[in-house]
Length: 256
Image 1 (cartoon, rainbow, N blue to C red):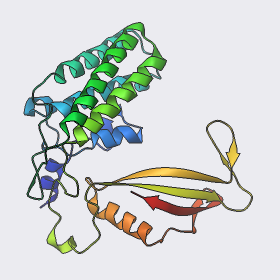
Image 2 (cartoon, one colour; image 1 turned 60 degrees about the horizontal axis):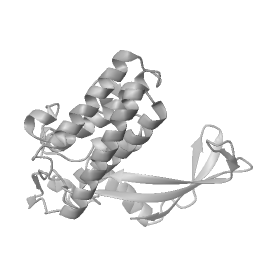
Image 3 (cartoon, rainbow, N blue to C red; image 1 turned 90 degrees about the vertical axis):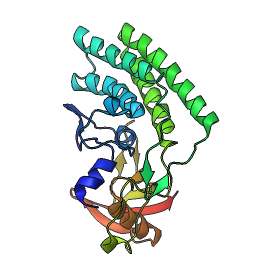
Image 4 (tube, helix red, strand yellow; image 1 turned 60 degrees about the vertical axis):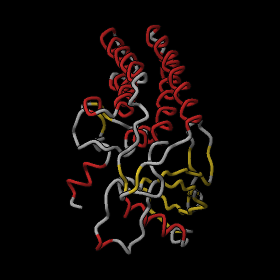
């Protein structure tokens, strides 16, 4: 399958964000990058992917406020409220649980309906709280409930995606290379070389830090597969890397 076909199978999230809004958060990228049956640059709601459309509206609440440094004025808050109400309306659509079409010739499986219902209820509750926070222009509450709504809806949508499958076919010439069919979570430890230390966000310092990485094989199965394969074979253990003038050691500790 050529690049255009592959692009049509992957969620049409730009490398930098949604429309003019810049996505900076990794969790947002993962939620917006979930596979979909939509062609690139199309309107999710028009084509029936209401879950994707609702996800965009929820994420746009944060993105709109980030663009103005979380100091939104009337028009920005009104736009955020419109996004919340749009997401709430979309969650009532009977098409919300529509599964992703076909992966590698596999039909989407039937997910856990009880889990779906619980996540849908959680998303609705968070959106109700988010609406109230937006009306009060409470930045802290908006951040809290926007993240909660985005996370639960992302988990809900992920239930409809088949595991161990890709939304497009990998060309035969690459079939023998490592592939990540889905996503993998890796934990790595980074240590400062010499007497250097890392400074944490809370101001404390440490010789080592632990990072959690989610590797996305839906969008880059070969690149992701190669990285995970090397991690499994301990390629990165005690590997020195240069960050500015400070050497660090990169060690992958585990994966799921």
